[in-house]
Image 1 (tube, helix red, strand yellow):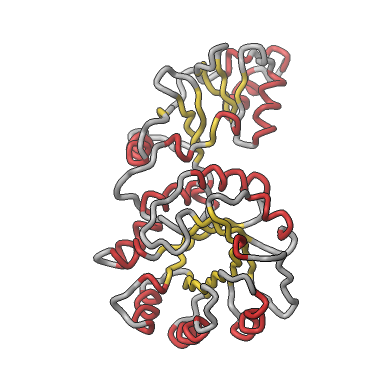
Image 2 (cartoon, rainbow, N blue to C red):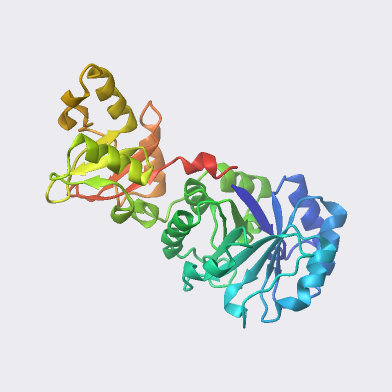
Length: 335
């Protein structure tokens, strides 16, 4: 996941020092907030003097057209427009070659992106109150991120607000492309350690698995009346998660069937595939995690096993299936 450093979050350094410091620490993008202030383009000129890293410009205005020529002139790499401030739909001129995105607050539905999907490449989720430094990440955005990824699998996702080491891990796990960080970076004693935490580590935990897991309505689950081999294969294929979960009539976990389990069943009965029985290929003791566990507890649980884990069924204390945590996006999110 790329880290976009918010340059206005530091009050102890002048802008050239900030740019050089961030550039030396290999920050990925320079995030510039333009709250209807044309003077920020002077700051972009300063960035260009000290670094060749891309500029990530977030424009908050009811008159975006007055910035179009400046965007084109400065060849800004990423430009995001705040949806809630717009009076009418954006009409971006052809001379702007930037990668374009739409920013929305936590209370705005992702359906507003639909009118821009042909021209815009990403969405920016504002996960705290815009303009509020050191705000807490609003966890409703986890579900919005999953929903957006499902609707627009080819679009990138950016997140701004409340991104600390723990939230960064969750966002990487969800395949987020870029996260804006300001207060967390500049309030740390060492910028290098803060950046490392954002990219690879976690240090403290406030969110639980249930806050960011794929919920039960987003995953393949088969009850006791839907257990033919064909239904198992169809369930795995429909959700593209490489497994399906089996539950009893009360929704309690009975087991899991993965692609690997299906392959073993096929190999065992290659001479007569009609002999494959679903109850033979069920993994009745999959590794699971309870929904009330913290991120740190989740990571410790994974590390306690000496084999790779790609997904974890999530259960309530009574063994009722409530969701799944998957990890494939930890790789995809870095691309």
